[in-house]
Image (tube, rainbow, N blue to C red; front, side):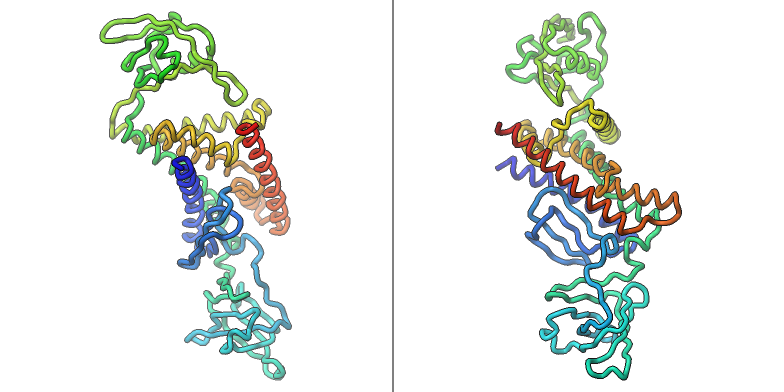
Length: 419
């Protein structure tokens, strides 16, 4: 149950922060954000506030912010169509009843001749059986369509995604991944404040039970100064040697209580991402420092970003197999192991996944933020947008392929767990 709660909290936080970035910059640019959704599929819960419907959906595989104009408008008024109109106190149309007009006895029924809800905000038409007199109706900027008794706010062109400058559209798309990086930095800073900032030296903070380090006699407070006769001055040098020598006997000189001890240790062989690395079962020492916690947050975010980009490059070039990818099932299994290591470890895991989510979304693939940013960039270079229908087809195909990849990755996760 602890893992379930932790996974839901982590997933919800990462998706919420990502989509919150899209939402805030959409509203700042004057776009109409129709929906802020966590998850996909059927609605589980929803409410409306400040023009936006906030929803939680059944399938925990992401989220989205639906901005007016990004997709074709749901409802289109055509000549000859009969609709009902309701008016506000200013005499402007504030509700357009598309069907079930009998449920709105106060609505004025007209037959449409012309309707422009993008620029003119005007509906022209006739009352049924009275076609001698053309009627003009001004439409309120915040009027609603009512279809199947559900209301959808209209979106004048200046509130649609396409009406905004390249810079504003690009920033709205980039804001989601950006917020994931910001979240990671904040989490790393909090961890630094609570747990302390790792020291530069190869100093031991804890020794895992039944580990090679415990068997060799390493103790809390020991500082490794030499391995196989080579001087060690940083934790990074220590871990590099250990990881690159799985199953190989190492001679370590450690400083302890003002003296020097010589220990022999053989790193355990750990399989991960198609390679074998060495591990001895120790954790780096840290120190409490309010001032150092802030640069530490940025440093850890940078290091995590570099590591993920390196692995992504290796995956693209075929140096890593696709089997290393994990979907929701694999992430849940990893979260279960992380939760058992403590809350601070879970926080670090959340920060790492936040950076990963930000990077993956910036990959220039259709349907991802990076793919849509690519189209905005192409528009900036060529001076005019690509045909929205063609772009829509590309994103649709890209989304379908991503869902197929998600199915393959999830199946691999299930095989690793149960087969």
